[in-house]
Image 1 (cartoon, helix red, strand yellow):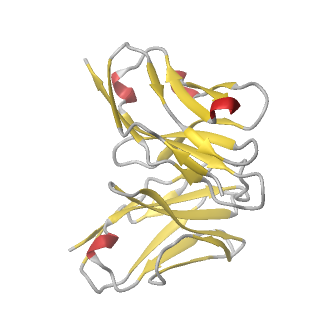
Image 2: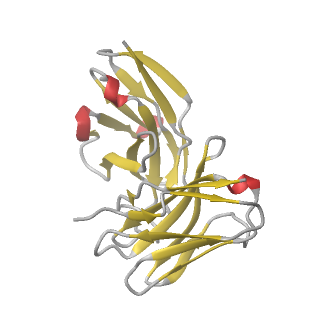
Length: 114
Length: 114
């Protein structure tokens, strides 16, 4: 069974631009979560989607948004990029997002803002 | 809401020595507990999980963890560390209620010296 696939692996953008990151979950998984990982803040939860609906949201500004498609694939968008948005963005999938279900992570997208 | 504390930011051990990484959680009931490992440039990989029952759980790569309710701890152990174990380790807690996202600790970076 294929794992969680994130594309692209690396991105370089400049301030003010916008970016879209993609995540394909494990087949059969309907919950997709996104995390921002930085050296200083660790793993910070962005949002979770289940059946095309945002079910949980972390404490991030509205510049960060996402969506999920009917095949459970998910995209994350960041508009008006800031230097502080440089981070590793991780996507994780699980069957239904319940607390007793392990999350399976992709290798992430490394976003660098110049 | 649940929370997780990993008191050690960085630990250095000699190859062949034993290892214990600390994790303390806060949750009103018996939580779901997880340990993940992250190698450089990669996503998080599940090492082991605790849901209920036997408080000593075995995971992959020779790791084990013990749930101690009285101490609100879920420490990760390995009897003999290998150089390939050098990585970042994350403890996470999941809630029983609803679809609350996993909460991750800030991680412990493990260095292994010869």
